[in-house]
Amino acid sequence: MLIVDTSLWIDVLRNADKRGALEAAISGDDVHLTRFTQIELLAGTPREEQWHRLATYLDGQRYLEPEPDTWRQAARTFFELHRLGTPAHSPIDCCIAEIAIAHKALLLHHDRDFGLIAALRPLQERWLEL
Image (cartoon, rainbow, N blue to C red):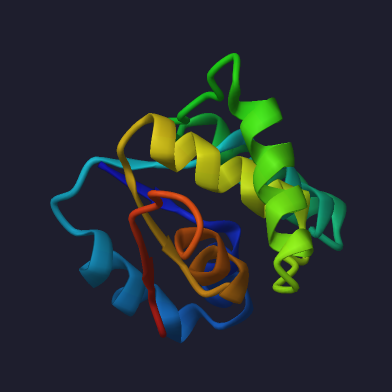
């Protein structure tokens, strides 16, 4: 099972030539998103027409949802990273990581925060350069 992070979708949306590389990376796998990716992508859409097209596409995707302890564990991870002097940029990334951990999913991304989190938590992650 895979989760494709927002960072990769943004790469593809900014440069359609990268779509093939993403499709090759996820081919044949059980691909999911998180609701954080849904909100981040929609919030970053500049035009109404694009917003509706993207919203329709995202409505058809499969999502992994947080578990009851996701929020507390994500906050703890964010706290621990700061305490260790390797702060993550976003508590949202900590939430996405915790969802991946809870569902035993491999997280594909292009975001340095996930490498930091994986050094602290049992996150299965892979940096993907498209």
